[in-house]
Length: 234
Image (cartoon, rainbow, N blue to C red; front, side):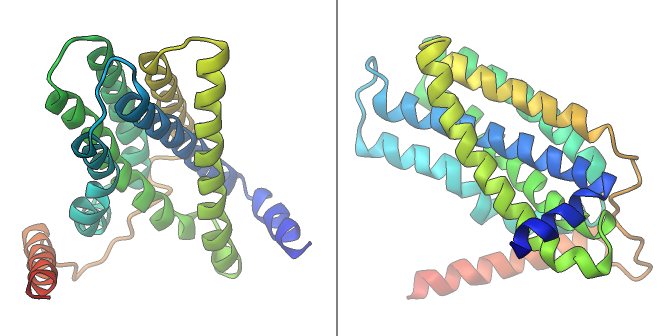
């Protein structure tokens, strides 16, 4: 199969293997965390699930893509991607641990949602950084294939992470907090794996005429506002 052959070629590149390992661990942790969030909000016996609660859970998963995603590229053009993977996953490990504590504590729902939203917000930077870093670990001739296979592998890892969450709950500990802690451990593993790559390896590239950060953020904000206005008018 051509896909298997292409993947075999890519896996001969050591830095690609390390970047792929970071992606697989990160997205497997995402799958675990998302399943834990869904089961806590929808199926937890001590909670009375409502349409508002389900909508809140969906907002936690999707809001970062709409509101934070447009700004991620601007910042990733100025931040070292290896450090984004390191500190982003460390931060998610800590935030997921805090979310697990909130699951077992008697806290207002909004506090739980803020904690969960923080985890998924950081995820937006990590996923964008993984794609932006690919040209630094593959040759030009392999880049198109890498751009196709890496996100697909990440999606499969997220799906397997969701399955792992169910198996973990059935066989190890029947607790939403325990599943969230499993995701926290996987985030930590992703952070440590990123240390296998050199700090400068993944960019960003130096661009002499790059706009100032404030100008780039303001331009992105104007575009986002224009898009929201367009939707509101229609």
